Image (cartoon, rainbow over all chains, first blue to last red; front, side, top):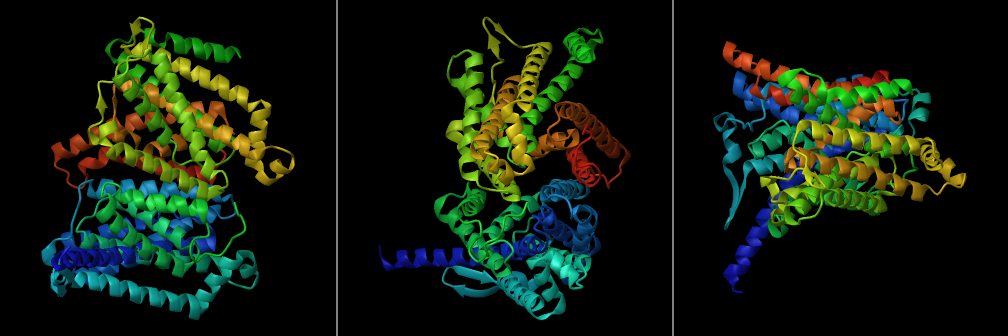
Length: 306
Length: 319
């Protein structure tokens, strides 16, 4: 093995690492939505992946059909998706809050199927992509070139945006009144209600924030891979859920860590082991974590609730 | 009782009603509905009896279909042996999946079962040397009994009718047996059931194995009826469709599930036909806002059904 070989191998490694971090920060964004809802309601919000998909489609639709500038479309998609998240909670989960948890889970699956097929009806099964001439120019220009490794500004943008959003989220959860209310509900919803916390308002807010982050991830993925299709939320949703489980469901830092690990594992697994089983890596990690360490990396042990 | 005999007699006579060319179509619909009844009854052993949400049922359906198709493609053995092996393979699969998931509760069980079935379909799609992957296995022979090979629609109709009757008898017998009561106790309160001396692990494993066997048996029939197996036949949607039948019918109610399949499966078909017509009309009329993929959107209705059922009638139409 000569120097050139080592250099090639290590630059491939670095390239994979950057791709892994980009993908990982996107998974982290979605995973946070799962983990927050699970924290306050104890519900796997199956429809979360669909919010992510809708975010991508709404931004795409605004950009390609109505010529809305990219960042404006991005913003509108986020607001609309937050609204969707709140509506879903209002119609499909809130009336079932007192029932067994599986009832709400089935309702969530129903919403997920509904939204997926709705997107299929409106936009068709064919893959769509953002028209490249309408994206900001700086996305495709190179930020860094090291030998064979090219990192473009889009990757930098995704990574920085994710970090900023996560820090903001951390601030909201830890330092604001509504964040404190969320944490209180996560500990004990009944007691929190008795202390005068408006459960419905806080839960709505949780859904809005989670959906906002999910939609950010959707638009970013749509731009990054230049591909949007109606079932994209299904695999991404499950992978992000796997990330949330890996980090310890209910824990926001855990979701971020889990997302990063999963993104890197997926890219490296596809690069070095088998690209055909790319999706299988996330499923396998999820199953193994649930079976052997259901509390995840950063989660707290939880009393069995059904 | 007399009503059931009348229904059975009517079913036995169905292929001989002289309605001409559309008979095969009607029979196919009836066969399809009964196939889904077998699937839904099998799923209800886990989802209804012990109360665990199984989102990966389609995995066993796929195992049964592929085992059956591969065996009859490579070896010259009688169909009933192929069928038994496929059913057993499914059952063993159910037990194997049961071992690691035995300790899981509620939604974790649901999500792990989902992961398992996704992995199974992924393996089927990628291990081309064994399953031919995305090419699928074509030319699966019709099931043969003694010297006769089934080929006509009414023959398949009777075969699935027989399978369904057998399934209903087994499920009914199970329901009112000691085992069935133990399983229901697990559904109501697993801790209390264990405290009453019920070996919950054993009964749960039994339910997993039994449920998976039914799924695989249905898969075997499906493969030989369609003469083809393909990874796309075993999408997650199928699990949801079967689940939807169980939910609409009411978990744990045999007649409810039969009724559920009888309503939902023909509805799917009608929707397919109606949406196809709509798509064709929109092409002719030049309407652009209706996408041609609307035909695939018939599952949309199942989403709505699931949400509405959970909201207004979580116990099902019959209970």
